Each structure stands twice: as structure tokens, then as C-alpha cells.
Amino acid sequence: MRVASAATGIKKSYCIPGVPMTTITSANKKSPILDIVENHLIPRAQQTGATHTVVMPVRADNKQLPLGIRVEKATLKGDRIPVKHLRTAGHMSVQIAAWPQIALCEEGVPFFLYVIAGTATMQIGTQLLTCPEGNFIFIPPGLSHPNGQRPYNKDQQLCSILWIRRCGRGLRCWISHSKNAQNFRPGYGETIYFYHEQILHVFDAMCDELMLRQTGELYHHGIQFFLQLMRREIRADRAYNIPVARGRQIDKTKLHPLDDHPLELAVEYIQAHLAEPLTLEKVARYTHMSRASFAKLFHQYTGKTFLEYLQHKRMEQACTYLRETSWTVNSVAELCGYASESGFYRFFLKHQGMTPLSYRRKNAHSI
Image (cartoon, rainbow, N blue to C red; front, side, top):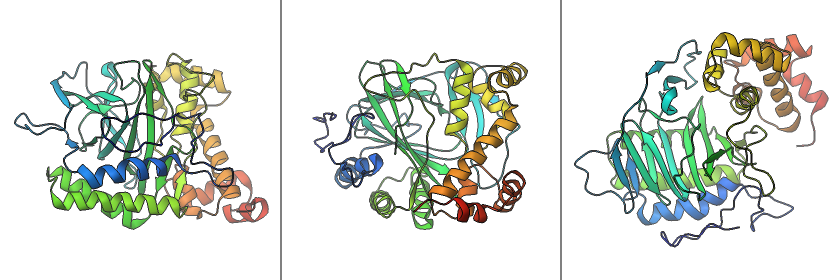
């Protein structure tokens, strides 16, 4: 199933999750993100990448917005709640504040987006942005943006967005989907992690230019170079595929709406964010419950305290990575949310009775 693109004139072979892409073969499944990079982003950047980049917030005197872009005034309703009790390890990005009433959050890292299909409508700061497919969006650090709890489309059509942001010592890249007033989690292969130093430097330099609102020749060459590096890393199998939580994915036979049980949502949220700093307070806030109520109900639901459950899931994920990949122990530790390799070694030895490398030698599959 292909998404039509009469507006941009760019070939689109991106397929809705759950429907096989024509480029996938039984011998070699092509990454959905690689497909988007090759057939959407690189052609778009080569043609009009600079002129189709919206730097937020949009200035009042900006008269050269891309065709179809609309910016309206919006209000930050409710209280700004500072996010506390999160680890502040230098290599991890954390949420700074939240506006629960309007499902916005504020983070200390920049976000770079591309609207793949449909028209995205989202509040960013005190502006309501309507952005059709084929456009890049840059959100600087400290500017409030959607937290993923509300759909991005105002109509019944599919809206798909590619998100890129700094995460730890790498880049996290994922695809979000909205359809029929519902949000859906990324499908298989739609959340990946880049760790190569060169791609990080280029991304940081590109964001520095956009922070200065410079979208000239340097940015134009920078975005093309960055996308070529993305393609190279995925093709060379140097980009990690991050497993996502079950449920609420776009599927041919079943849709999972937003009104799932709050504890089920919490479990899914934990699984999808193991690589990030997670606290009881943060997950309780995600489910719109008080800390005390969430702790009590979570223990009843899972049979474990929040910390016990989180440690169990991280260790379970680490064992999977050690068995099924050749990634370094340091990479496994970071992708499972451990602040340091030495701390991961001690925790692994305590719970598994052997070191991570010993576990890999004993249990590794053919890689």
C-alpha cells in the first residue's frame, strides 16, 4: 500500500506498518527508515531541503514559509510542571518540564522532524503549526512540543512523522503514526539508534546552524551529508534496531486505541524507553496518576515494585542483545539504560552469576 504524493512529486515507496513493502525480500528485509531516507529525505533535500525547513518558533516577520505551512497563535494552558527526580548523567537527555493539560513537554535537546505522509498539526511553544508532507521541522532545546499522547492529524487521514534527536551518546530515530484520531507505536524496524561519531558531529553542526536560523548553503550541504551518512550507517548494519512495545501499532487486522488500561500503557512505555532515564514519577505522570496510587497499582498489576520490574526488563533486554548481536558490552549497557559499563558489569554479575562476556560465550546465537 503506497502513500500518494502528488504535492511533492517525489517517488514514495514507504508503506504503512503491517503491509509488506515491495522492496522487502525474504533474504534481506529493507529497513523502513532506509526506504524513507532514500526515497523521501535525500531527494527532498537535494531539491529544496533548505527552503522546506521550518525553524521553530516561526518569527512574525517571516514571509517565506513553505507552501501549505500555517502558523497560528496558541496558549500554553495549565501549569508548567518542572520534571524532578530524574538522573542527570551527562550522556543522557532528560525531560525538563511538562504541561499535562495540553500533552506538551520540554527537553534539553533539539528535535529534527520530517513529515512523511499527510498533514501534521502540533502545538510547539505558543504556536500551532500545520505542516503538510515533504517538509522538515526543527525544534530547538527548551521549546515545548508534543509528548506523543495526542494524535498529530486533524482529519481521518494517515499522518506519519520521522523524528530524530540526541539520545545518550548517539541519535535516536523513529517514526510515529496518527490515524482516525489515534496514535500508533512504531512498527518493526521503525526505531533505530545511530552511534557513529561522524554522524553525531554532522547532526550537531546542522542543529547549530538552525539554532542561528541559518538555512543557507552551509545548512543545505550539511543536511545532504547527514542523510547520506544515515543511509551509509543503515546499509552497513551499524545502526541498532530498537525493539518497541507490543500493541497500538497500525495493523491490517487490529487497531489499539488510546484508551488502553493505564497500567498496560505504563508497561508498554517502560519497554519502549528502556534506554532512557526512567523513574516512578515520570511513568506515573505519563499515566496521569499520582506517585502513590501508581506505585500501589503497578505492584498489584505486575507483582513487582516499579524498580524491580524496571531492573528485570533491562536485564532481560540486555541478555537478548548479548545473545543475538555482536554489539559491545558498553553499547548494550547504554541501550538498556545503564549509566556506566562498570555499573552494568556489577549488576549483571550479581543477577546472572557471570559477566556479560561469559554469558555471551555461553549463550550466543550465530551472528
